[in-house]
Image (cartoon, rainbow, N blue to C red):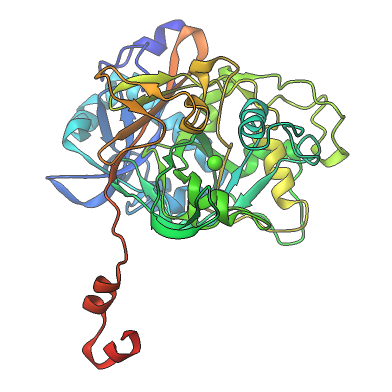
Length: 429
Ligand code: CA
């Protein structure tokens, strides 16, 4: 079977991260296609799947009409499997090249859009190394991990409406913060950070009141994307007690434009670490198919590699996170996005946030141009990429999530006046 991994008439190399073992889905436009189409990345090209399915897969064409991936996500695993099998067949069988070759467009000519309607967004905190680093930085002298951490996947509900696609500029947030002398002030964040994470995209919904067991991950989750959970550490530090993050996280979350099907990650599945204490039964994955994932992320700041966080040691898996999310009876919706939490490894160059890389500013990072960073400066661009092992020595790529920081729009008294309709101006005087 080795032959067919390389024998594509489309000319994609077997070792390309978007080779035939990846086949991620996204939504794009280009000069000839102003209406958003569903695309599949094939090497350096994008197959216009909306057009291809109309010609070759009429029974599934309604799921692939374009706009976004929502109908495909909702269709469920049987359809996902059938469409992926068709794609693999088309791209390896020369017979289809005549129809499909004209539907391959250079990815450099395409504009990628937010691939699906984000329903709910939940962010976890499931990396033991990251949680330990944060505990040591922010609560020195106390136990690094909160008492609940090894009993349940800690998480919070984020803001789905501010999830943006890679490439969208991120405006520096403003908010309240408390200065070391106790003064409470307002202004642009002075501690803006990234968080390198992997996101899981829910396709098949679940019924209210019916928990999803951890053995059913693949029935509900369509695939994965990369997540940059931008975080304003100063705003977060002041607001988060007692109910968790709010404005320090909600201004923007960036995701990669390509959703890699769970089917592409079969060779990356590994045993998760041993848990101590033993989890409660609904979180006990002993003897089940493993959902540890051997994915390696790479973080670049202004195109300089600064970290390679490994997902492989994650304490809580996506299957456990999903089981936990629904154990109270909360239902899943198509488009729900839940993220792993910041991924950090034990080595200093495996840390998934600047808070850890600069150890909260006590050890600033020196960049190649000689400048230093404790947190992000205006104009800084963060890129997160990732790869996983594929079958037969191939590589499965997760693409890239990229975002540049633009200066804050600070709400000053003058601007409040300027933006206020004249009839109501007295309200502000
Ligand atoms: Ca996070």
